[in-house]
Image 1 (tube, one colour):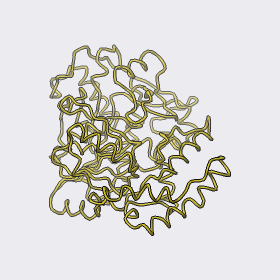
Image 2 (cartoon, rainbow, N blue to C red):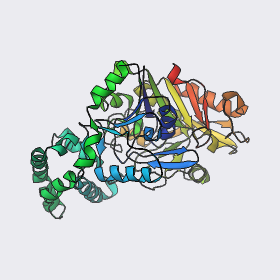
Image 3 (spheres, rainbow, N blue to C red):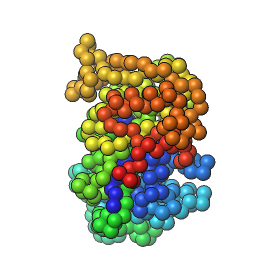
Image 4 (spheres, rainbow, N blue to C red):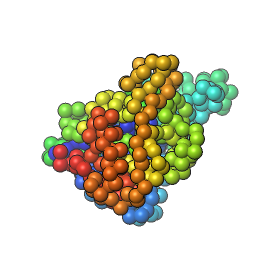
Length: 429
């Protein structure tokens, strides 16, 4: 029995989809415990590129059952569009299962998301505009709509009407928008009921029974640690807990059942959206990383901000998530660049910080303190063992491991499923 958590160790887009896809071939269930269709993954299988937005990367596994856990917020239109798109390409999404306790994104959540961001202007958070934040806000405010509500029209109508009593006041009186008809929202949800019903399960029960039977469960976190609403660079964060602890809450699997916590981290750093980013580059190297690394958001199409590896962030993520292992992705992108800077600490107004500053203001003003290491010129995309890597690439990884406070067990040397070096297999740990 193994219960493995896969967590992004930076600001997202680290390559969690690839890691989940690789491990998903060895597990029985792949669970997405948080986020919505704002948490995309890119997976390359057999030379085919798949951009998953809401579905777990495990949906491409031939064996694993993909599950959307109770911590996910589900846009039903986006869900079925994505399923139809995959099946049109020959993929099989028929095994997908959905927790009855997951919350659903209503059209009014998307409207509110967009108008609120527009209202904030320069103070905007940089959301995807997909209604994720307002849906989580309703969940915490106890006025949310859950998957199970769609199968009880009376309850659904009561909840939608109650939610819109307040929201229509906000839309009309604060944002000068038209009120939304509750019946239109009810009809919207009911239109998906028949197709949705066969997928819905009591996920918490099924997943724990699977572990009791000795099966393997992989929890695939969306976004990343630095976007965690509690542990990230607040307020420039997502609305859920995409950390290892959040994976337990969003799946119904208790923390004592976790056997491995795998942090996914790029060999450099990227970020999408607003917020502080100490190692961000505005020169030719930032452009190089963006272009060579193909750094474009799966969901938004926005170019990712790029910077050098930040070991302060890595240490923080290792501590917050209790990482047992790291999966370093996109090492091949650094080939041939001469010297590679590594951020080892921050300078804030003449003060050195070896760990994450407590103050939001200090982190915003943090300047990276770098050390440099020589890069390698050899093509590493064909390497399949650590020993096959050039010595300089090995030295770089050894230094990252030392600085990050966690062993490196996997190394990505290309986008393909097979372009991965396995040093320690968490399935055998």
